[in-house]
Image (cartoon, rainbow, N blue to C red; front, side, top):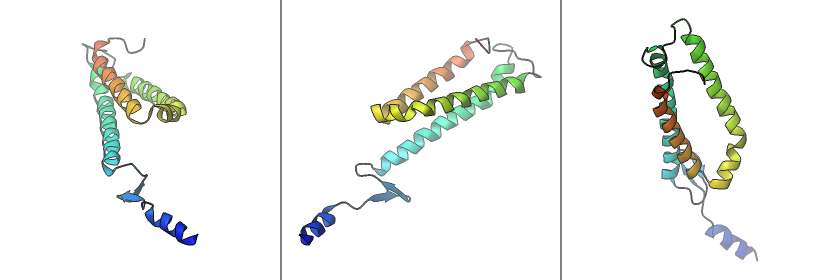
Length: 127
């Protein structure tokens, strides 16, 4: 009986690791790298948008906000962005468990791209 347990144990795959991260069976190193690359570029896009927001807000062709009000308005925009991130964390686990990782990440990137493209189309900061 013990020989059977030893044979089964020896047939199991040893957990693979990539750069110190243990990968579950079926997860490839390329999936892990892709996951981090998608997040890197999403954060890069969000960061660059926040950086360019200063120029878009004070430009007379777009929002034309007084320079004295820029800090206050950028603070409000950043605050609401963080509030939305905290709120979405409450249900993101359920969405990922239901649909997997790929579909929510792709949908989020699509929404992010559309929202970034629409920023210059509006002329009022708050609806």
